[in-house]
Image (cartoon, rainbow, N blue to C red; front, top):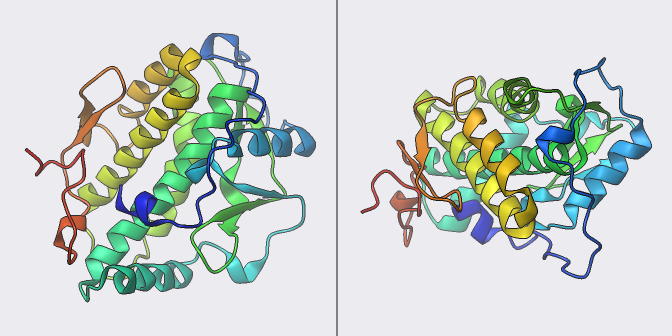
Length: 258
């Protein structure tokens, strides 16, 4: 994933940090509950816990209100897409939009997926916003719901908070982007996030794999790609366009890779 490798602000994994308690799918509550039924302090604790995994799992939890000037607006996204174009030295707008979109997708999927599987909580991402001028995110006034059962219900709850936010932004992206490219970016970010979680929390192999497979059959993701190995290696059916940037290359899960 090009955005991940180029993100110098992504925090390193704190391997000395205490391991969070593991709550697989089988231990989750049976009902989804009312909106925001998880107390704010518990949600903040869960987010800070999974942030110790580093990288895209870091989602700043701020108990204060949302700041209007840093919302996930199309205008703010376009600024970040242009920055990606400058970073990679390309004038092709689609490249910057796609790579910025892929990075944002990873920052949405990672903490939602980890909180659901590690803590049995699905964060409500309605107040997510940029944490500053970079690509990091914060969640203002964080709330969450108890993770529902069975697995298909959990997949819909997780997708609504991660991919749902992404799709709302996509309807106003600069330029014309192929819908299947954007859906492929989301699927690639999902599986990449799940593979990272599996790497750091191998005891969650069964629930991580089960939920990831279910998510790939949820919403707009069916047909975007397939899992090819037990470590959640993935082959997508679209391309993020990174190879078109100067000195770019085909990603490991690219449909064009051989």
